[in-house]
Structure formats: C-alpha cells, structure tokens
Length: 253
View 1: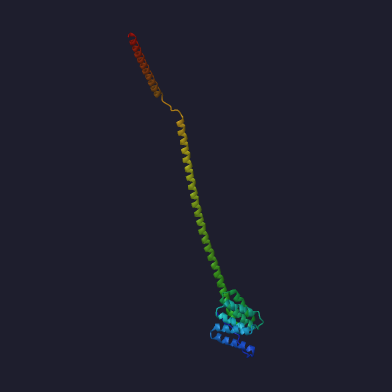
View 2: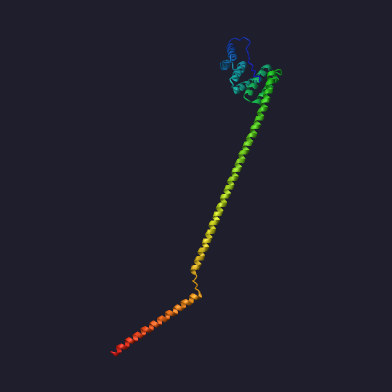
C-alpha cells in the first residue's frame, strides 16, 4: 500500500503578517522532511495562531499528526478541510490523506469513501486508485474475520449452553434421586411406625383379655381345692374332738 501524503508548499513570497505565517510553515516543512514531526506540529500550530484560516497550515498540521500516528485527530482536520472551498486537485489531496488516516485506523469503509472522493476530484490519481483497492481488500478481510469471530463466539456460547444444560440435567437427576430417597425413607419410617403401633395395640389387647386355662389345668385346680377342703374339714373335726375331750375332763373334777 502506498501511503503518499501531500504537503502544501508555499511558493510565493509574502510580506508583513503573512510572512511570519509563511516562515513558520516553511520551518515546519523542513522539520517534517527531516522526520521531526513533533517539531513540525509545533511550527504549524504557531502558523495557525497567526492565521487560523490557513489551509496550508491546517493541512500540513494534519500530516504531522498522521506521521505521529494520531490518526483520529488527523482525520478530523482533513474532514474539516474537505468542507472548505478548494481547487479539485487540492480536494483530491485532502481526501487522499483522509483515506490514509482512516486506513491506518482500520476504518476501511470510511477510507474507501474518502478515496472515491479523491478520485471524483482527480480521476487520474493512481495512488488513490491503488489505495482504494487495497482498502476494499482489507474491508473484505475484516468482514470475514468478523464473521469468523461471530461464529466462534456462537460456538463458544453454544458449548457453554450445552455444558450448562448438562449440568442442570445432572443437578435435576441428583435432586430427583435425593427426593426419591427421602420419600422412601419417610415411607419406611411410617411403615415401621404403623407396625409398632399395631404391635402395641395387639399387646395391649392381649393384656386386657382374661387368661384362658386348659380343661386339664382346671380339673387339677378343682381337685386341689377339694383336697384342701377335705384337709380343712379333717382339721376342724380334730379341733372339735380335742375341745370335747378337754371339756369332759373338767366335769369329772
């Protein structure tokens, strides 16, 4: 890419106030050619203090800013110059340098429009034609890169979403399993509780019912009672006989 920058050169000798402006511009041009763009900027700014409508001072100041890679402020000055009444060749130079400023700032669509305007004012400008095609190529590459970045971001977002969905699914499964385990535990506890209550009721019912004895045990108990009764009767008879005997003895005395 050709980054040709045009500089307005003062050719006509001037007098008075204009001479100081022209002298500053000439000194600025010398610094510019020597590669001392910051010193050139200072000279051009001073010339504009003498004459703030100086096209040459403003144009060359924009060039000095461009060379210092201050493309944003350089573009602003070139855009301001493009609005002024200039000769077609001068406007072509302004738009050419404006295109270069946009190009370096990677504003390819804007640089394309600037080069087109340069060619409208000077169709024979081969540098602007060359830079126009270069800017178109860079714009295409930028659009392709933007598209690729967009697709990469979409894929990344999709991967992230898939991972999140998978995690959400796993979390839900874990929660479902936890809920099922809790439900089963509650069910088992309730079942054990019911069983214990049934057993307690059964035990209580058994305690409340009179104890049943077999017929054999009943007969044995009845026989024992009869034996006890006989023994009691025998004992009573003996006691009565003893008492009678004792009474009889007392009467004989």
